[in-house]
Image (cartoon, rainbow, N blue to C red; front, side, top):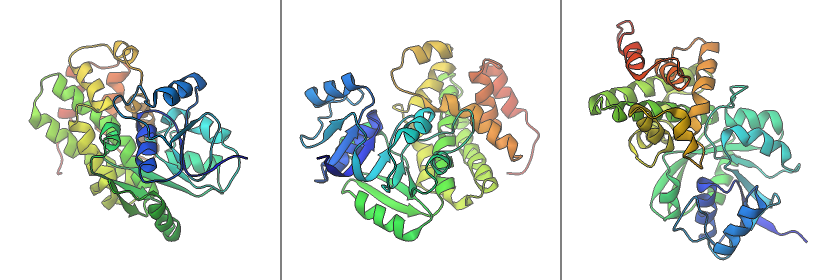
Length: 324
């Protein structure tokens, strides 16, 4: 007979493993799903994930290769694999907590929008905020936003997922929360470029500030709330990702700023840098609703090889003067 878990975490990357470890330490019955059977077996034997070195998996955390039957499913797969994973999930009533950040490359949809298409009757929420996986797994204090519009569902989820290390704050703005998590990766690439190219802290501070303005404009245009941008899913996540050397998006931008080719950077990595696929999708989504996003536009052009760093900076600094 299959075991019923309190929490099933779909995706055994660093973030999924950190979330599974955090919840298992709270005494919950947790299963961590890994797509690759060989990798799952290696994790189970070593009780460690190579993508989160130095963190021992709790003894009672099950590493599985079949989708677990659980009260709540935390989906922590890379954004470009989200649709395929959701389509493969068996039918059921278990709510989905979407823990991935970005936009789908071909449709330009955010995680809750993809979930609404694939599982229109299944309750869904977004978990997002300024959280590095290695710090969460190490038990360091942090906070996240848990966004979903239905108050009773949100309250129930917050109780099911509450821990003594990761403090949750509720939000009704699921779209705004998801958008903040997507856009910050693109702005973080730009911030990394600025620092890698030696353009200075002044330039990075200005970039982060204008990045917040870009997130707010698009959030409102898509039906979200401007105030969401000042919270954990917007400003909080943006600050961490644009200043933390452990950020994959910031570090990629830093290498670009030093003159390393994008293809070479990506070849050297085993984990996904979400901002690379998100940048052109974000720009397309913004164009569709008539929102100007000069930072996203510059990053997209840089990643596509259509503009060098000098041209990228010139395109931003040379824009028509306007009030803030």
